[in-house]
Image 1 (cartoon, rainbow, N blue to C red):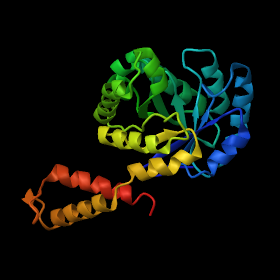
Image 2 (cartoon, rainbow, N blue to C red; image 1 turned 180 degrees about the vertical axis):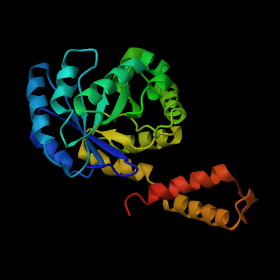
Image 3 (cartoon, helix red, strand yellow; image 1 turned 60 degrees about the vertical axis):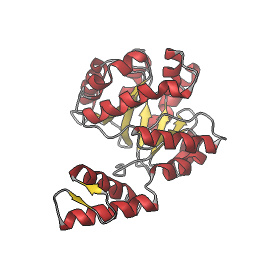
Length: 280
């Protein structure tokens, strides 16, 4: 199953609970992430791996990614061997990445398992060291299609209590992704599944920082995330006005209301319209 042009929601589901995964697949997320790592107790790892492999033997209603166990531990190799060649796998999420060499080794490993056709890789950066290496990781290998923060682990690593203490790291990830030619990263999960107002406010802040979309841990979070990241009616109207003006005159110009537009402004307007059309 291929992904939408612009995914906005990634819904996590624990790999050892197939009934929860089944519900997640029809919950409306753009991508479902089956988790073999943090959401699964140590004594349930084998069960989670087997259940996920069984799921991925056939097509799915939405793209399915799998978050494998930490690459520096013994379980990741078993995870990769169990799922690498299965037709239902759309991507691999690699937790606790700290260096580009981990991406390169994983990509080569996947190529050897799949005869050269490696699934898309996504790196989760969850420590201060990972943030420092963000651009090197983001540009490590063509199979890497995205990076994002794991904010719970990063918060613990930095000893940060207030949310604003993560903003520098967030901006660093956004810049690194852009510099490496990757899509804007999605936000990390919002841990409180009841406080939807706080989720909406956090999404607004994330959008202002340059994120695009967000990971979720409950289906009720999905419409809040999508609404926060889709352009508003006003933004769409403004973008349409800019694109129409640029079609008439491709040079820099001032609109009747005094706004100045140039190639950069037009490119932003075109991205807005592309995002608005994702669900049409």
